[in-house]
Amino acid sequence: MNCTNQGSYGVSAAHPLATDAGIRILEQGGNAVDAVVAVSFALGVVEPYASGVGGGGATMLYDAAAGDPRFFDYREVLPASGIVSPKEIGVCGFVRGMEEMHRKLGSLPWSELLQPAIEIAEQGFVTSDILEYQLTTVAYLNRSAMPHFFPDGEPLKAGSLLVQPELAETLRHIALQGSRYFYEGALAEEIVRLVEGMSLTDLKDYKMLERTPVYGRFAGYDVVGSPAPLAGITIIQALQMAEYVKLSSYAEQSAEFVHLTADIIKTCFDDRKLVMGDPAFVHVPSAEMTMSDYALRLARNLSPHRLADAPVETPRDYNSTTHFVVVDRAGVVASVTNTVSDFFGSGVYVRGFFLNNQMRNFSSDAGSPNKAEPGKRPHSYVSPTMLFQQGKPFFTLGSSGGNRVPTILTRLLVRFLQNGVSLEEAVRLPRFYSDERLIYLEEDLAEADKTKLLRMGYRLQYHPVPIRYGGIHGMVLGEQGAVHGIADPRRKGKCTIRR
Image 1 (cartoon, one colour):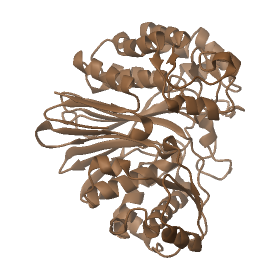
Image 2 (cartoon, one colour):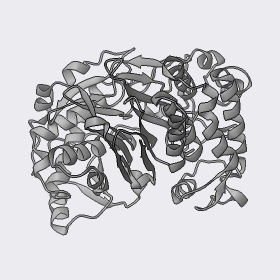
Image 3 (tube, one colour):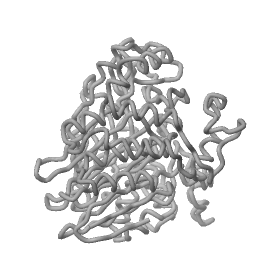
Image 4 (cartoon, helix red, strand yellow):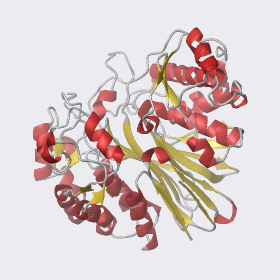
């Protein structure tokens, strides 16, 4: 799960084969961006429920030689028609985003970067119980259209060999032709036929955006987060509020710790829904919202013994993402979250991959800054994050988990940075998340703590399904190039660091 070395480079991702793909590229002389491309495409093969060419994502990149962190947004957008299709499919950004990042900053030939993913799809890999669970629980998949996932109509069992020749063929075309294969021609025409309101122009004109990250302070560190309409502001606010209410002083799994964490996140969500939207369409006062005095105002009504206010409606967000991190030989750091929205996205299957359902994350409220508009990107809790100490990168991390990500990252950083818990132990700590006043628990609480929470007005549900509690992947960068990485056991990933 964890890995250490000196003067090293490495990859931590949610599947061992994806980690191996990134290491392979780095050992061939590739840089961090090259590895990002290789790992991203490989994850789309081994975790088809979480990300892939039919989705989108975001990457934060730091290169000391180039200056400040850079943020690349290749998330899905609403077609120019303004129509949210019945399956809520957005214009895919993944392939264009990968290609544009490579064009700007990559070093190895594009086709070489897709080769590991092509080999995995073509030769197959042994599946885990995570894929079996997803195939068993997701009801909207057309089993007859994907017999490799459903042999004899039944979900593929863990330990089976999954071969995906159709996906391998799609990836070969992308390797040879680049994004033109995806955004123009026969594949684009097939996607447009399947998605109401989407045109060939929507696909051809898709653009990756480079945005400015958001900045805040927590526990003596500079926190660099994902810009609007993503969740960097929310992460920074939650961390600052945790510092003000001294969340670190409460025992793990105590009623006070669980309640305060839940109330912090609810307060952030309530503040977020008032202003959060695509900054190309609405003004988001990011600098103001990440100032410490702003968080102090939000935290004033919080108490360890009572609920802050009326329940806040938990914003809709997707369940399925994947996060990974890369550090190359030159010390360039990448933090990446990719997604197809829900598990298997919309369930619409095209040439070996699934189309996203990202448009479900728009608000149905016509007055919301997150309402659906042509060419707009919906809000998201995608949160590639970096922490700096005295101007140097110290910790890069992120997690899968949709609207649970702020809870997951906040409590990890509180325990790791303020309580001095080891990174491995902090990742292994039992998790929880709240949905309005219902708290889901990965591990049960002591009876006395459950009684306190019930008296406060919470409902509790023991729900021990590991993948529902995210998948943290991160790396700590120390002195003289020392690197310490972590891969969350909930996703059965792998961290590899080499000299």
